[in-house]
Image: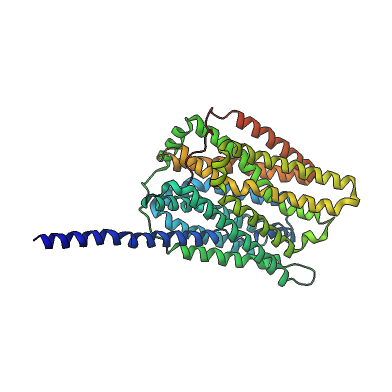
Length: 441
């Protein structure tokens, strides 16, 4: 009997030792799929050339501003319905659906080449982005929590975001090569970058099909979501974070959408800045600069704390806009220095990649660390809605002003306004909210 008992104990201990070898590979496999999905989440080979493509079809700068604004309006309208849909279909289903809707939007842009078609295409892209706004991060957090590693969320999220930026950057390089290789005489084939973008989006959806289907979140209704949002907004730290996010979101998005119009204006001084190979390389390098910054967020939080980083991101963006305005003013004053000043202005794009690379993981970590688990989903909905609702009319207005008043005036106004709003928001933050470094793994 004693021998039998010892044998059973030995078998039980061997079984326990073997269990991790079954669990760990599945955990790693899911992480690898999430990383592969990140590389293809936004494979936008055509995005650096959409303004040029729209211009070839007769759309002016103000029209471009309206089309982009519609994209954000659709994202705003679709945010709550897609969140409710995720409750019913599950997050994996949304990670499949999102890229497919994005692909459809690009197909519409390619085949329906007028203002109406561009609006429909951008609307579908806004819907696709709205579908994807939460599920990838939520699935990652759930995966880590199931394996007792939720404290390492920032570690994995920052690296996944870096892969996302890397994949987008490589797709920009691909787009530049396609536009140049398929040119017709002196006319570059910007349209040739659109359908390959749709194909890459479909690949992302196919990868998502292999993800493990996590238990669906508790079903919510529109009424309960609004009620939760109202309750969350009663907390001062959530209201502050919303105000901060609106300012940061606007300072991030306006320069990005303005890169191509800026290149068009600068190309009058430096013709190379209209060449698709250079544009694709430039946009690719911008993302390659941002990618490692995302992965360094945990180390930066540990070394400097949150407060300097939250101050630094919007201030750096505002200052870069002021410097871009100064570069344009100097070029107008001293035409002989137009070419070197054009390259100086382009170099400021890289300065803006510092906060672009850092902001997502840093704000995600803030929400997960400082907001209770029962409120995280609705807080993210509040941030998404607030940022898009505030920026949509601002984008249309800024590009209308840019067409009527000129690039220099708009850059100068946006930089000064961003600086003033940053100081106002940061000085109004709840006392001690950003104090300390927290646990970052």
